[in-house]
Image (cartoon, rainbow, N blue to C red):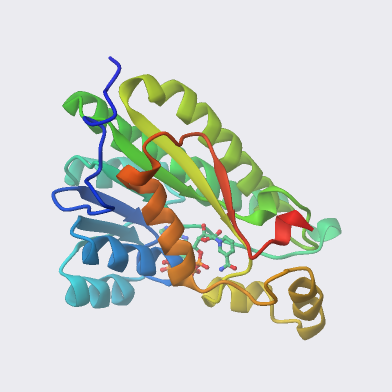
Length: 254
Ligand code: NAP
């Protein structure tokens, strides 16, 4: 059933009051910044993550519901879905990166990365989208991808493949869920200053080469990525779906 622009609205002037939002990987980094921004803009937030201390500290900070779940385990996702209610907004942010030279890449490492970074978002989105469809009010989903979906990065075959898959999944979701008033977009950040980046970009020479390719001359801040995510979730983006939006200081323009 088509849903009108106003029915599928997520509030006026970017306000998200009355909206229920689910953020995966909300304990750290970009997910945490996004959960806090959604809360500050009036949404009721629930987060899924792994490390209990992160979830507890976020819950204490913003009063959100926080559930520990291994998003690489489909049965754990199904169990979590049964405990959570329905949502208007979803951010699939949790991901892993296991850098390894291509010649040493093992099948189980590739499969672990795909399980968390591509299969996890599919299963969480199915759960959230079914709830949105049942309520008939539309909704919005943002998948946190990466510029790694567009270019090759040494030692990151699994991660690059998982993010290219996530962009492809985003487009298919947009096509299939659009008629129900559900918009689905991806954001594709360049290196963003979080724990994940510290692990993947510890080599100063590699870091300098990457910085030299970013016209704005710096890496992103988690807040800057959260701003793009929250924009795509909001009413201002009501005609936007199926996009992969770089948040990359011009990296993909070079
Ligand atoms: P981060 O600081 O490492 O945070 C990742 C979050 O995902 C953590 O809260 C982590 O929880 C959670 N997570 C990972 N595996 C999980 C699992 N199996 N089950 C449940 N939760 C899990 O990373 P980030 O830099 O904020 O990255 C967030 C997103 O941005 C990711 O999708 C990443 O690919 C993307 N991205 C990041 C960069 C960058 O340079 N940082 C650039 C482009 C795209 P635990 O720590 O408890 O495991």
